[in-house]
Image 1 (cartoon, helix red, strand yellow):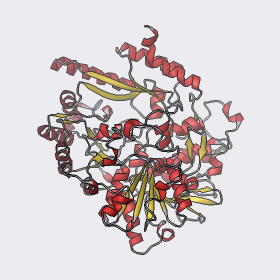
Image 2 (image 1 turned 90 degrees about the vertical axis):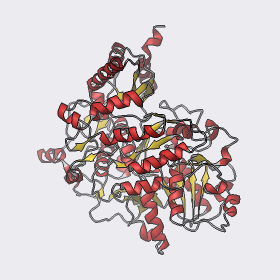
Image 3 (image 1 turned 60 degrees about the vertical axis):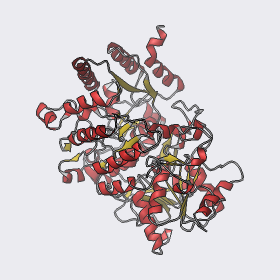
Image 4 (image 1 turned 180 degrees about the horizontal axis):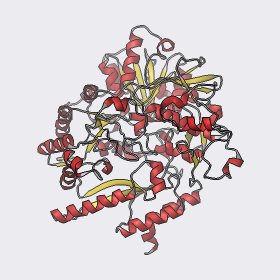
Length: 632
């Protein structure tokens, strides 16, 4: 859509007046979001709104409703015919509000003027409970990253507790996890055919709901929420870190634990999915996470049930990955690509400024980093847009009145996974590993960069400057046999990226230097970054440039001790770095790293893991980044 000659009706309505200007007497769906309304494919509420609009529904969006007054924002548009939709926004509201040290942020990048205070803590739950109180008979559907990553019992870093599925506290009728386009379409289709929520919620993939009935054929039953909340017995903490197996394990049980595949999940009692009893306490929680992660990474998953109170959370298996045509269709929806005009006098929206001239070329990530939510939310499979769809969006960006000739990002969750997939998809269908890159690049992975090189070159013919702002995975083009690297054009890709798409600074994320830390976060050895730097420096010499390679590091990761931070300081200092791209580890819901942080236990190795938890420990690790300031 051209951005010229736009009027208010080019956006979805946000007020009663805007609804009436369209001649509508009522609405089918009303969406509530913790973010400001930006009509752009990078904002989830805009995507779901446009998808529903394309299904012929009358849809409105209420962005950042006031939850502290008389609640008029929640009732001003009345009662929708089908349901309310609720999302906290593009981020978990707690990550949005607090730093890694739990300090309240003074800004909010998803709010006009970068102002904090326009959404509550635990926004999905707050909005949903208000709507259920005001309209108890209208179904509430929750989605987005906050709901998605809190669908099971999860560790909440900010309250330092294991919280039940968000369905319990929010009182929502249905949760659509992951990317929600397919789920919301199927929900609408079944409602149009006269189905009720109670009748259809069991039949829609990639959804979760509360049920009094916990008997499901062929379901995987997790340890109950109450078991996951049990405290860690004090005597466990003093046992040897070398102990591998559970108390009371027989040799047969130990053998079962080490087997691969889904056979671990034999059901032999009502509370646990395991074929043996894990020790009491937080290991129930850790092992439950492993079941969820492995089932989230298989092509053909199963229903997962977790008891909570006198009922259960039922999570239906996900859809298969979207097709290229389906993803293209989403990006072809009539987005204005701009914030709603209501914000003109309130200042810029920083998150929008960051992506306004960027283009997302694929979804998903097969990196499987243990601190990251992408693969558990978007999926491990890469879904790439067609070249024609991407070029059409390039034309839309060029038509924007403020475009000055620079596309700030042509990437995705990991910028250089475009077009990649397994060579033999039948092998992928049997795989439950969370990462295709760790401990080494899967031999079945086709990591050919030719399609990406071609795309870069074509887009450069259309606009003067094209940068890659999202992170790259350098283990996709480093450390591969020469014949294969040549076939996959790895050296060509890196030189193309270096010369045309860095803006003089290429940012990458080795995360740490310690082998044990990197093992737990599923990243390659630091030696691979050192090899990358050598190749980068060689390109500088070859082309007479003075470009910079900027590494990104995280302190206080699982297994990271002060001596590991000392080693990081020494190695980066030797390479000539004064680090600037650094942060402290934030345990976010439903990631392996947060599970280890809370439980002190690695569910894969079945060994205890040290984690820095006190403010003093975390601050001391953070200080190691800035050794050079102490020398001034």
